[in-house]
Length: 348
Ligand SMILES: [Zn+2]
Image 1 (spheres, rainbow, N blue to C red):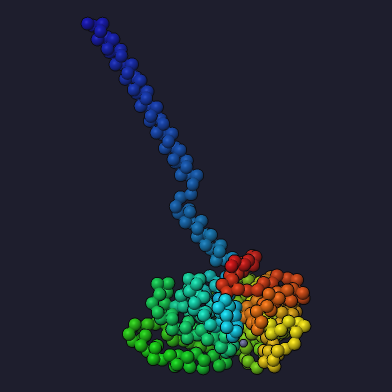
Image 2 (tube, rainbow, N blue to C red):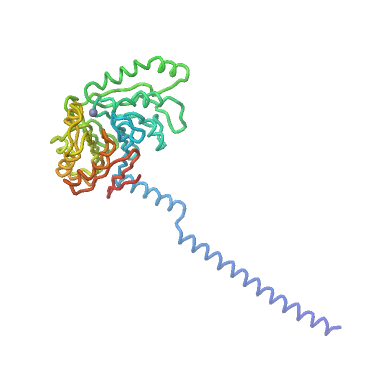
């Protein structure tokens, strides 16, 4: 019996030693695993590191001086479902600057997920209706409750002499509606503050500078173009004009030139009416645009205000310009979007 117990003791001892061995292995495995986790933790950045990186990236984008230009409407007074009235949105950092507000501008803003109430700065080039007829829509639709945003204060408007009358008369024309919306719905953003401007710096905020300059739009005086500067980059909006030395002076070397164009006839064709001849006289033909671009030398020129009186003329515009000018030039479409950064890139 004693011998039997001795064997049992020996077996128990061996089992104990083996179990301890396993336990040690397991615990050393655990230590190894913990080391690995800790090494992994060291290798990958902590949450605060990753936040810092994201902040750096955001800062990088903000400091890059990038601007985004969206052609909301590339049309003219000529009725078109494809080319709505003239309007261009320039987004710079937090700033959303709207230049002109032609037919359907509020609809095009909605298409790029911007409510009219998210716009509080409007710059008018001149008082032809194809640049202003969307004003009442931009002003009043901003008061319709919209989860994306409603304007709190006044719509700020800059424009040439006569703008105050256009704005105040529109508000007067809609006074019944505006009064009811304010009283019944507690609507805000239905007022407008107007600054009638002349050539010079008209707006400075968050590093953005807007310069107005005179252009030559025949009998429509005054008519303005705008240059938007931001951290060494620039965008120029020609406004409505024929060939203009002052446009060349203010647009020289810009990154992006948004240029008006009108075609009333082909180069070899006769004028169909006196009206066509007069219209051409205070707008830019494709050939005049080529001459302008040669002097201005923009990184990219994009046509807007594409007024053609025969449908077949539209496809000829860029080629007519390129016969004179060999730089980058494109025909804008409604909602063409252009990033102005290190490069000037087009995204449809
Ligand atoms: Zn005009």
